[in-house]
Image (cartoon, rainbow, N blue to C red; front, side, top):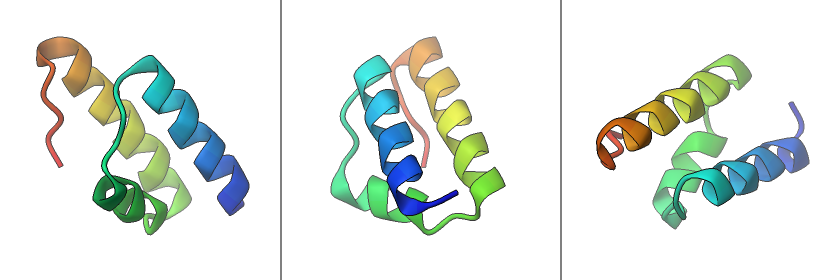
Length: 55
């Protein structure tokens, strides 16, 4: 996945959930593609369940 697509996914995620900190974005951008998608999904589940995101 190219960096532009990753940034677009992050922006979509933030629109649906909550703004991410710069550190969170940087950590996510370093992940391989499959881990990036999985982590975003898990963070969304965590946030919807209890409003807390575990890093």
